[in-house]
Length: 404
Image 1 (cartoon, helix red, strand yellow):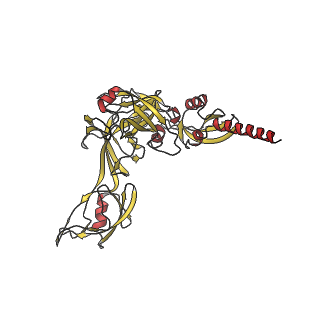
Image 2 (cartoon, rainbow, N blue to C red):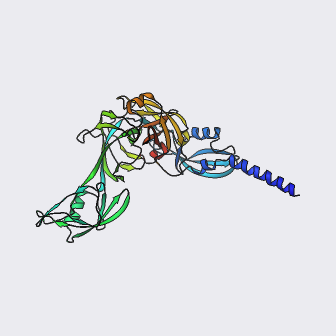
Image 3 (spheres, rainbow, N blue to C red):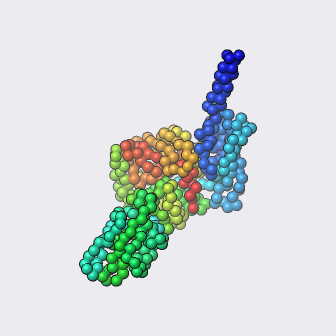
């Protein structure tokens, strides 16, 4: 009897192990609600047993967009043995709208919500030049967001709040590395105006260089950069801005512990190519009005969801040579991400032409499109400090979720 029980226990244990090994729990439950997929990708995942030998997935459109510029919504149902539903998830139906492929550096100028500290300055008072007293030292890059509990939306508002005050003490709310702090600043009365001053140099805009990823063919909405524009590690909350053509002046090659950079120039007096409406963890977004010099309207593709991404050969699109070209890379790892993150995949540059030209990935290449099997599946976001030929990319899923 005892041996029979042991035999039954062994059989049950084997069946459980067989079941666990043939059901891709991680692959199924790490997919976030609202991820991007196509019928073709679901069928391919079933053929490749991505979700395990005992699980199949089926996709149906649940909402057909009435507008030609918005993709349809749908649902994917995962069934055990093709019969028992174990998860149902909403998806965005990819592969319906074409996009123009980017790869060109652009100039970015963002108007921020708040005031960014540049430096301290002395206030000229009746007693001479004096420095304001502060309960905590404000540093370059700190983002002032409120004065005495009133949110700051512009430099003009900041000046008004300070100059119209009858009180010497100002409670300043500010961000440093995206964490909020409060400091009390004792204002000094300016000799010339008779108004209080905080004794700070501030600005309300941030400029930089990034790479255009794609432009929606139907709407003109674009995605660029693949990660947020920051100022001293603070994410800049965009309240407006513009994008420009920029001129590539030269390349500082990447080396170990030195990521290198594209040396580019643009002027804010140049013609504006489009606006900036969002600055998110997954890139900069807005709409383009003028495509000239930014995209080839003969070069289109479709966005591929994360199920399209597999370890193996892929390409980066970049115009670092002066021409828009594809450079071979190898995707080393494609992460399953239940939550949005700008480090979705890891890749290595294989193309000798790009390595000879830039050393690998350099600053300014963030946003460069990643193409695999004819689909735009992601964008370059970061370089490995220890090895400029290796970098991270973000899935096009996360970028498309924020598209204007």
